[in-house]
Image 1 (tube, each protein chain N blue to C red):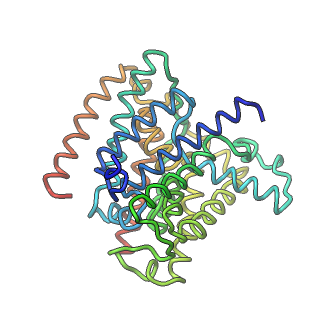
Image 2 (image 1 turned 45 degrees about the horizontal axis):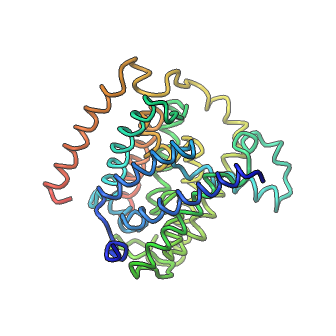
Length: 170
Length: 180
């Protein structure tokens, strides 16, 4: 058992099946679907309220999603902690800014390039997930497993956009 | 905070810890694995997602039939899903993580995910929220009336799930056979 916890990678099929089962429990006991991207929008609302002193009740989108800490926001914090635990157990935890990769480009081998690619990439992810109404978890896993039309379309589009962009860069 | 709300937050945290642990063990929190998927050289990400969807859909539709779970499919339109999805894809390839795996990458020590990545996602969400009033009217155009495929075609979900499971298995068979 301990060996299993310290292994650095498990079979993707085992991981996928476990995430599928986790989604059953999450639907049953929390009445929620696994998802993450709305939490970044809630955080945006909380930050606008706190630091820019904006009256966010005047902004219809923040009215719609309500800027507060909820189940999903805690789930995102949990992902951070769970990944930390897994990485520490396998001895993989290490602090770095440039990601380790065999696909090198100016966008991931220089600090300026990486600040640019991660910041701009983040903006596209944040904007795109709000536009589509979900991300790789909310649409890609939770939506596809419910056989939702919007989610299958979004999930396919995530990969089309991603593959085209990646093939242009690398 | 009421006890119920607190319990809800703890359930979210606990679910997230398991989710993050699995994503990291699966390699999905690694930049190299995600970029490898997007250049079609490493299919780890799709294997995880499609297995999760396959296992998930069987259980969820059984639970739904037994009245143990309620579905919550998202509304949307072709325009919203495709435009938003393609923009998301650009970000996916630039950042090399998605919103969930970025939190996981931050947990394993990747500062590019933790600082510019997360700031960018918050910023992109804020841009959307601020221009939402102008976008709202055409975002709601062409909204789906039926939210799921079984509803749209008025058929039993199993008539979709069973062929879909077959297609996923065939896809995995070919991936493994070609060493991907």
